[in-house]
Length: 161
Image (cartoon, rainbow, N blue to C red; front, side, top):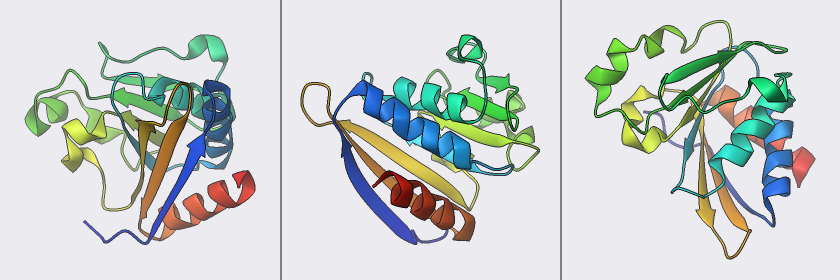
């Protein structure tokens, strides 16, 4: 894995703000981008995911939890592949799902619970860790690994900050 080139942290005051941050990230995603999400239950991953999907042009009614399907494809401005690794035990089980076929392919990949199987991430990716910061507030820490993810993070944070 390459060293983190950029780390940024911010606090989102509400679920709506987390959603808006997701929308902006989704607007910036390009084919080949990989975003891994980490956070406890209730940390705001779903709000961020729904925002990313909206920003990528996916109809709100299409966004569902892929917990049972593991990977769910969405059609939008670009293809968006939403994965949830919560129910998987290890990399071998992930491999058997065909998940690796979508990484680096024609769309962007958004993965919840990346910390369950961190080796699922490619060398270059953006990792966003969400944590509770009191009531509805959440801390988002974004780490960019590689040139494209660093540029993505800088643009996302600059236009939101």
